Image 1 (cartoon, rainbow, N blue to C red):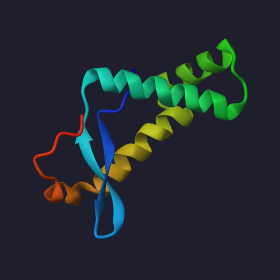
Image 2: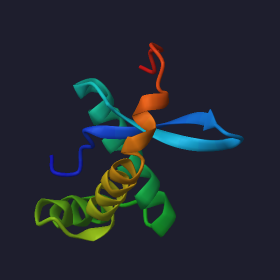
Image 3: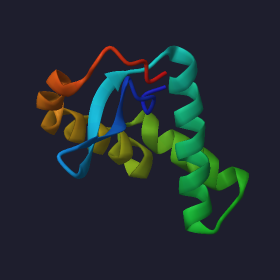
Image 4: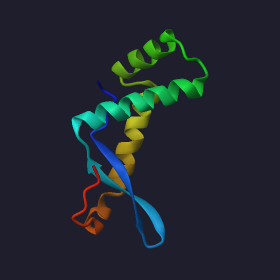
Length: 94
């Protein structure tokens, strides 16, 4: 699917602020976060129907809609925060 994220921002407290550190995730977590995003987006619209889900999925195929914008915003944030990888210690996040 075109809306599955490859990278997620994991929270880490640095200098009194919580920063998002971009890290790659496994394929299983990619599916999990995709389903969570879809369910959240449908609940926000207040229309929990099969037609709404189909419309959301079809829009994501053509790289349009709310779901694809969510993926792009995660990638933009991870590109902005890639300098924070140097603060990452040998700690497992996933």
